[in-house]
Image (cartoon, rainbow, N blue to C red; front, side, top):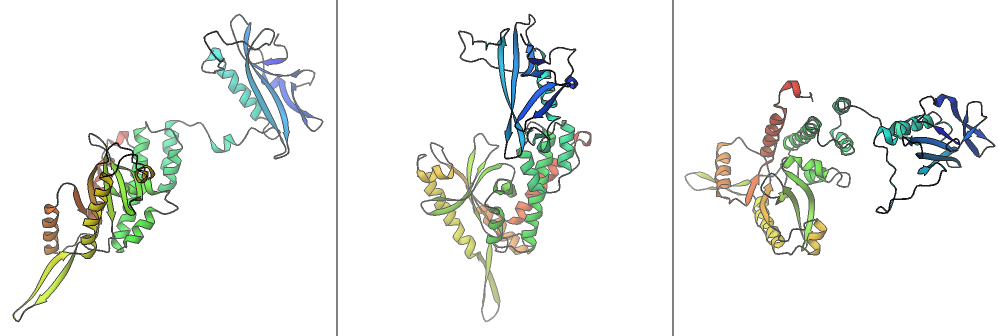
Length: 377
């Protein structure tokens, strides 16, 4: 019946009684330790009556690529005569699963562990070099040991752990602190618009999703310099509202200012007047024009398809110009307040200082948690 297969379901069977041997260069066999018996594979599960079994036929094929034998397993559901079981009349296929003890998941892993003993002879891949089974606490320790937030983000993308609030908090805090540090550097060094955009687009745009965190946690799907009718713009999607909102961003540099001061003099005195800087004066009609162009397009428009906007009707909820940094001058502050109050709800002007303050508040809020349930970052 199943005598040609090593029966892992038999509690008296011991994998130490079998081995893999090579013979004749291109041949590799599964045998008993004394090599008096050769096996075609393994029995992984049997029905209580013993008349149906899940077996694994296994051959080993030599590979000139790595000089090892490649195991070629074939899993089958068979009867006593080793004939493949047919699917039931209402099914197209027979499914081989290892979900429970009765289906042979323990025996399956016994077989895998046995094969790994011979990794110098047969090719079991580099699984154990790249993967390991760890507890949630182990993953937390691993992430806490990371010092590079960009690499941390890449590592986390490969882990299916989005349901873990602790891990999400660790990663989010690391990334927020990283972009905050960069934002602080931009402000202190009076960086240009080009400096900021190059940082967002660095390494062929691979970091842009994470680096758009400078605008806030509520902004997702960052499209750098989308094109529509030859116009260039930056677009985000704002969540946390009743429905996602598209937001246009026009980035200028911290080195620029909201205002320019125009001075004049008379016979009796000198006077100065605050006016919008040339950069800001150009940006406002520019971003409003982008808004108008997008909102007149239909969802099937090729420009919108290329950007990734598929709404039936495109609506831009807000336009934001990011420029300059806050000044300590009292008159500058007063003019900034007056200017911002004059804008409507669909147009905002932010300074990089305000972005930094917003990030500080977000980080403080994320860190404000019961220390008994928190992981130190």
